Image (cartoon, rainbow, N blue to C red):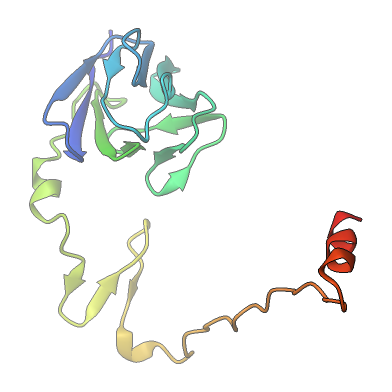
Length: 165
């Protein structure tokens, strides 16, 4: 039997939620985890177990469900330690890994938020480190987009008819 919980790491919630799978998250009282957040749908997402790994499904929520920084579509794995964001609340999924151990994320949290290490910046999930002095390409800033304007004729009535067509 898997022991799983969602630890709140961001947002206004102060609790840690023990999961009884399958579990649902949403604003409605009929959910396993009920959150009072205007950005969360009544039934926002469902978490279940598939082959030893938690999976999350967005239930067609208005504002989406995010695993890491990616908005999910369909069933998405939620490996141990992964961040799950629903509305303004971010959770960390904590549960047994394949070896049966629950990883200790406290050490991870101690360094959280500090992405700078001297003159390098860690920007990749795979630990890719870029030295700012090695950046040779200038930032690309898109040109402003011109919006089309309606051609106006001598009378407002003609302009209205052109819009209606």
